Image (cartoon, rainbow, N blue to C red; front, side, top):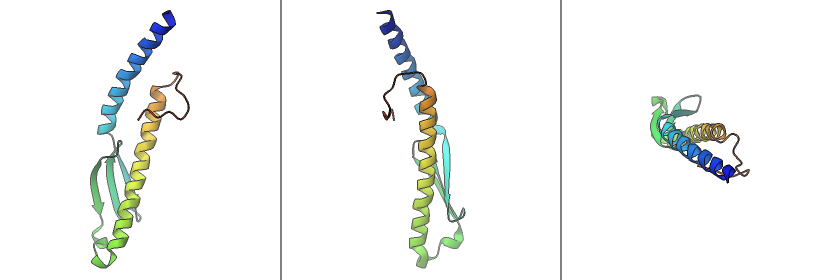
Length: 106
């Protein structure tokens, strides 16, 4: 019974830390770039798009498809950075807890 109470206490503590981490991830921003930095995007670690910067030399109507591809590539890079950050923070938060492999908390 004592072990169960201890485990419940740890679960409540982890829940509070998870809520704090969720709020923190909303304020952390990551950048992604493509085309040698000609297109950059900024996302929150949770994936909300905050900004796009496009080098003016890419604003040629005849090259719209290239620009679209560069935006997607920059977004993909920034999203991957955010996901890695979430994974690192989650691992640090749940260290020592018996969580099944492959279980995602976010």
